[in-house]
Amino acid sequence: MPQLPDAPQVCPSLMSADALRLGEQVSALIDAGARVLHVDVMDGRFVPNLMLGTETTRGVASLARPAGALVDVHLMVERPGDAIGWFAPHADMISVHVEADPHPHQLLGEIRAAGCLAGLAINPGTPLESVAPLLERVDYVNCMGVNPGFSGQSFIPETLGRLAALRDLLPDRVALQVDGGIGPANAADARAYGADLVVSASAIFGADDPVAAYRDLVERVASA
Ligand code: DX5
Ligand code: ZN
Image (cartoon, rainbow, N blue to C red; front, top):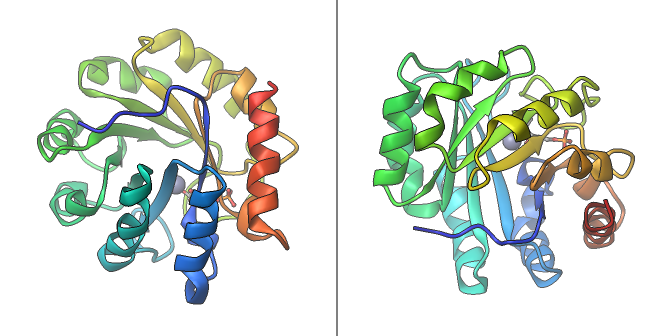
């Protein structure tokens, strides 16, 4: 089974990368130390957008794996059970939304059986208690800081309190991820409130120098 890095991580979310320069940008971030690469998968139904697919994920894995970096696939799709098998060969971590399927318990087992760390993602409006019955089968929880679908949205401030409450709820072995609305202004707060895996798209790829923006977030998270 893949192992998460011990130290907190900034996880570049590739949906905001320059699609025509994706390999170059991913390689530069790996060279700068990125060890968890976040791939958003959207079906236009669970969320109102269409995003990255298996071939992009395969390409990212071909760059990540030789460097020991993990590919983290965030499934924002209806019927995520179908997609687990499509993405697992190119993924090290897969998260499914607790809202997306009536049988998350089963899906988490399928993710682990496919050799990936199992993540449970929860939308901002979903009660935190929904993760409690599933914890035995979870390796990380993705606490959304926005309603998923688009990068560049404003961080929902109540997320910080949700992170702290989740950290109390989760066993130590379960990593806590925050995803959406993270940038220089709040990356340290997200870490201070309990996040181990800090996802960021537009704050990295919207910058003139994505590597410099990534390094800046790493410093802020490390100093929190
Ligand atoms: C949100 C996605 C995020 C997104 C974050 O729908 O799940 O991973 O890429 O984008 P930013 O960091 O720009 O909010
Ligand atoms: Zn995401």
